[in-house]
Amino acid sequence: MPQPTPAVPQPAPPAPQPTPAAAPRQAASAPPDPVVRTTDPLDLSRARRPDHRRGGGRAWQVLIGGAAVLMLLALTGLAVAALLDDRTATPQAGQQSSPPVVEQSAAADGSDLNSRDTDQAALTAKEVFPGQQLVVTDGQPAYRVLKTHSSGSCAVAATGEIADLLVRLGCNQVVRATLRSPDGDHLLTAGLFNLTDVASAQRARDRIRPMLDERQGRFRGMAVSDDTEAVATAAARVGWQVRGHYLAYCVVTRADGARISSDDSRARDILYDMIEVYLNRSVLERRANGGSASQATDAPTDGTAGQDGTRN
Image (cartoon, rainbow, N blue to C red; front, side, top):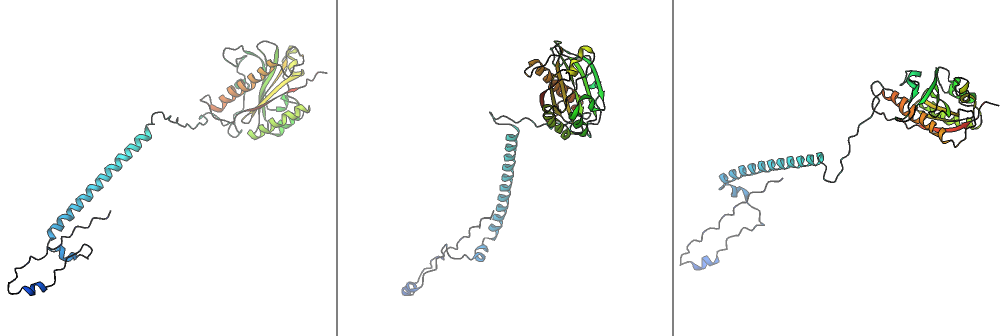
């Protein structure tokens, strides 16, 4: 900020001298003294000489005043900064503060399910179907697990072009079980196909429906005894869903071997229980997170269809 220019005192006009009475005309004819106007240039050298000590005092005053101004500005800046910091830390009344954003990631002992490269441990029958009673929802009757099976050949769980497709896409394992519904009226085989990555699993998912519609292949139910033969031979309702590099599936038939209708509500409930609630939310979620809190993953996508039986 430019410092103000100190005011320069104007020299007082000379005191009038007494004029001798004998020379009145000469005094009257003398030119008037010049008057210094505010617009005239000031003679600073002449003005500062008689007030040298006073000018030095003003210089100190200017320095002290400037320092005071700087201190005032610094204090004002600190006050403004504190005010802004307080407003940032404390939301105004009626203003909802945003919750902290927590980046979710897999636990240290969990897995990224999008590829076998990051999810290298093979499935086991004990991991997928650990007991003889399978409770899908707390408080609901249990499904009875009749038999479990794990194989490195995915073709044992499918036929025709569906089996060929799974092999071409790198499926190297299937873990499955045959169960009886809580009311005993339905038999089902459900399990997981282990494919190379999420892209191969999605490709299998997209190709299965037209193959079923064109009767180019089917999912195989796994019979346990004579009274469970229907799950392997009768017409069925089937469902499938992708989660990471896994393809979950379920085959549902009537226990008496009668043809199952497309609007069988109990069959739809079984497909949802086994694929979405159990295999996805329980088994694969637990594998993805190593038993810890939930991990964000791609949303599962699924499909359902009917398939003909193998009986003549």
